[in-house]
Image (cartoon, rainbow, N blue to C red; front, top):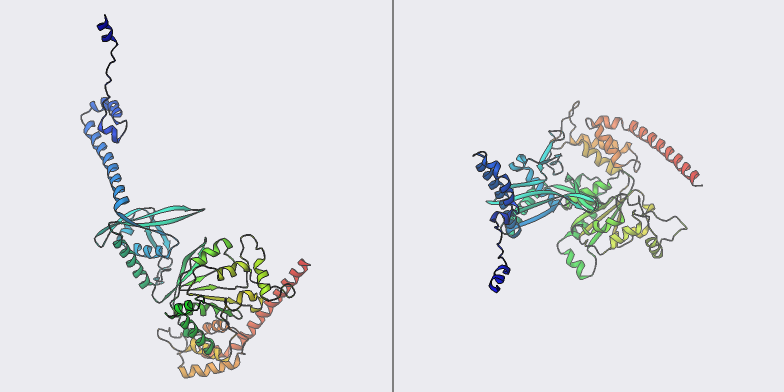
Amino acid sequence: MMATLNHTTSPTPLIAPHISILDIFVPGSTSILAAIEPVLATNSYFRPLFLCMLLVFLGRHVCRYLWGVAEAHFASTVHVQHSSEVYDMVGLWMTSQPFAHRARSSVARVGWRRSSGHEDGTQKKPLHYSPWKGTFYFIYNKHLFWFRSVEKELGICIEEVVTVSCIGSPTILKQFFNDCRGAYLNLTKNKTSIFEHCSGKWKRTNLKSTRPISTVVMNDEVKEGLLQDIESFLEPKAPTWHANRGIPYRKGYLLYGPPGTGKSSLCLSLAGRFDLDVYILNISAADRNSLGALFAELPSRCLLLLEDVDAVGAARPRRGEMDITQAGEDATQSQPPSQGKLSLSDILNALDGVSPQEGRLLMMTTNHLDHLDWALIRAGRVDKKIELPNADKDVIFRLFCMIFKRAEGDIPAPKEPAEDDRTVEEFARDFARKVPEREFSPAEIQSYLVEHRGSARVAVEKVQEWMDRTRAERSKVARVDSFMEVQRSSVIN
């Protein structure tokens, strides 16, 4: 009885279910195979076809997994943002490679090489293509590289980010970027890079041929003094000299004078003369949130150009409102700025801040020196103030000679043979006698001379007619400005 009870109540051993190896990698695959088994049995071709498809599917996933492991543990990668100048270096190299033209996904740009100084002008708005939003493989120095372009969200903006990777040591990857840099610098040789700010970051927007300083027609004594001062500032021992004496290693200049006197042209020519990149800060477009970051991103050796500094936030207080003293400067800095817009305090803080600006050359320009607050242009911020006035007799004479004297590669005049240099100088003296000093800007005179570049004689004969027309136009503009000022005053009152 007892034996029977023990026999009937003993637990039944559990049998572990059969687990396929395939289920380990693809859960539920056994059930799927069991469900489609009747279908596969209906035709002898279905089973091998299905197995081939399954092997391809599994092979792709296994290869992708193994490649991901290799990329994560054995690959070297460099990430490049669209706003970085390195992006231009890599992009320029990519556009010259055969695989870039075979890419299934590309981005088209108009005048890509124009901004790189390689545009020859033979084709209007040329199109250039580079890989985009995908992965592309290529061989570099017998090493496998892959280029990947993706879009990433950076705050409220979406920016293209490029990654370049290779299996092995990062040394070969750095060599690749050095080669891209070398090709880029070789292409941009004798060019001046122009950077402007967009969305709080610097971006190269143009590349101009270096303008010889000899083509900037101005007072020779002032020009030579400026060149010597900048050359002394940029010499290799200058940083150590400043550091030993606790003096910030930076230099500031203010160029002032009427419109058209060559302030911006002089800045660009100086940048080319000393091989400096130009960073143009548009005060009207900048805001206080990005100003500090823009100054912090400036390279150690560059030319920072602030054009028309009297336009925004830097106007001198009216008489009686604030004395031009240090107390006035402190009061100006303490004034609450409007939301988002730059104030004088923001500009002063950026100029005097702790951001790394060593070696920076600051050039400010204005048409109205008397409109500037002295807090902006005091010693320590502006080391020299240089006036560029309207053309005097010497400038007028030299402008005429520069336009009409023959140079290599000149296009011959369509009507008259070109005068020799002696004849040109005679016409230049006659022209300088007819044009009054300090009345017309060099830009106005140059524009007139270029219009009549085919004949120096005609340029001299018609100069009086041009001066009368220019004076009449100025008078008309002055009347309009006076009327608008009266209207503004009546609205305020």
